[in-house]
Image (cartoon, rainbow, N blue to C red; front, side, top):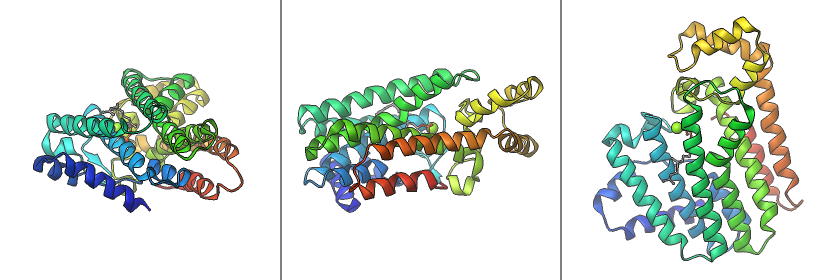
Length: 296
Ligand code: FPP
Ligand code: MG
């Protein structure tokens, strides 16, 4: 089914009629296509692959910009486009994909166009907040949740909602499913940064804290540490960690129950997502379970 989306994306790129863009786009590794899976599952409709292609191009554009902002050399185990061709090229390819996606989005009804375009405003607000929060250690859970809602969950929520609009289903129900799934997805991502090695992640492990990102496991850890250990944790913020420091963190994450608490939060959000579904939405249930249990 996802091939129909790949075909739409290839067609969009062809329509740009630019050899350089064709070459650059071919360098982007394909992702899990979570947003497309949701859209195709919710809307079994001939317009669905095109809507999914629009969302995938927006997502790809946002990652191109994010890798410039994060100064990331790797994306999905391969050199990032900014690492290969520099920031200017990565930013412009992002702008091209984003503009083409908006051009195609305008052919959908206004309810869908407004849903997706509003989510992109939220994405950008979320990324800006992420940049701001990364300047110092953030112990505030509410700020973290607001940021991950905007940066990650908003486009997943908008994908599920738009697909429901396309299929004439209850859009609020599917929007809430998408939102909770998106929040759980980001928390799992933040956990994997701590628990998995670089080979599995396709990027360095423990990169979040080094980049200044105080993700949920770190917030929970901070809450559970005594004053001395808190000082040690704050001292590691944005540092290139030694093996001994990584081992100390791993040990504290387990001993304090901080990692387990973050996992529990992801599971709880996943469960809330399931409560939005009908009994017959079995594939959407499976998508949620696969996401919570994933290891990369
Ligand atoms: C990854 O976060 C980043 C996002 C999910 C959203 C980025 C959004 C923007 C740059 C603004 C939107 C811009 C356009 C052109 C649509 P991360 O750094 O936590 O995750 P990572 O480990 O995958 O890099
Ligand atoms: Mg990033």
